[in-house]
Amino acid sequence: MAFQGFTQDTFLFFMEVTFHNSKLFMEQNRARYNREVYGPLKELALGLLPDMLTIDPNFNTRLTSIISRIYRDTRFSKNKSLYRDHAWLSFKHPETRIGDTFSMYAEIEPKGYGYGMGMYSPDPAFMKGLRERMLANPARFLALVAEAKKRGFTVEGEFLKRDRFPEADAALKPYLNMKNISFCFFSTEVKRTFQPELLAEVREGLLSLKELYRFIVPAAKQGNEES
Image (cartoon, rainbow, N blue to C red; front, top):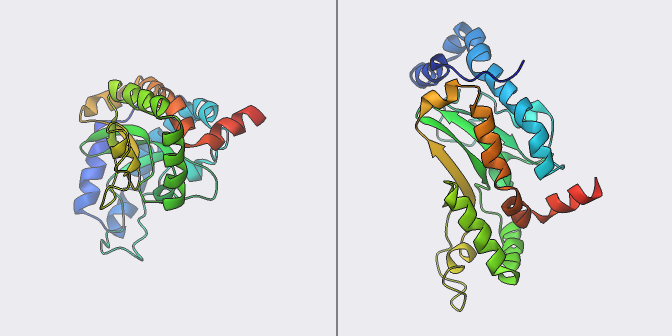
């Protein structure tokens, strides 16, 4: 079945699970979750996957890897809520977790929806390689970032405590001093998610990041050339 959009009840479910975060609530609303949240997410994932593989053929194609789970892992968290009040798709390499790998994503939450790409936990080795590529070709990197910003993406991430590149070009310096980096689009226009056209919007947005993704994750381009 092709993606038809989410519904008002998708977002109502997220708000309700925030206040009724219990096994009883989930037992009573399991069919609702499958119909209003998981079902549309699955259709969105299937609609996006062919294009995502043109960006990086190394992406994991298993839906269980792409679609987030409603259950939270509370073992190492102070927040002991059992269930999430949001959901996402994550296109990433096999045997990696969304928190510590560079991936492409689409998400919905009570306040709206978003999409983009990034890495949320600092990875010194990964960022070291990216800095080397930035310094080797700063004009290319800055041009790709400028294009992403024109399309509505914001650059987000944590920064090092001190400037480690005092002699670097002022335009490049902020990126060199980031511990992790993401390019994010977010909209509070929830009604846009109720339309099938959301698929085309997310597809176009993520495809616009293709060259920047391949600059950041050069193995994606290599994999495409080998396939």
